[in-house]
Image (cartoon, rainbow, N blue to C red):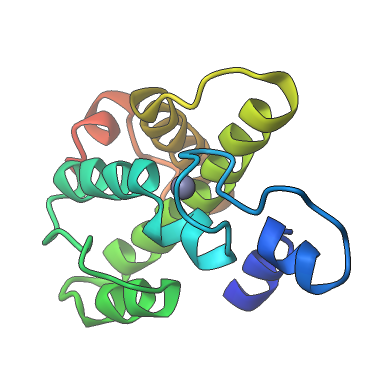
Length: 150
Ligand SMILES: [Zn+2]
């Protein structure tokens, strides 16, 4: 599933590899790193601060040492906890990728700034709705969710 999700992300580096001519292959978000898929979802410093804040929110050890998305997935699989908690973490991860991608495109195509705290809020909201409407844990309450008291 993750390969599929990440495969949809057309990074500049990928496009350039496929022969699309781009004058600038630097990251649209930070303007520093070369824009690979791995940079977009893991290495970009703005994205790293999103992961940092999500780790604090979900009370898990900070995973910002990860160098790749598979490092992050492995780290997540090693976490202890119930299957409910694991399911919740997967949903948050998916909502994160989606929200990061959306915010990046809004910056790139509409010129709206990429604001870390706004993306984090969007991730919390998106994952709450997802858990509430699409999983067996529909009894979850918004106030408790925002404090990650689940
Ligand atoms: Zn970047």
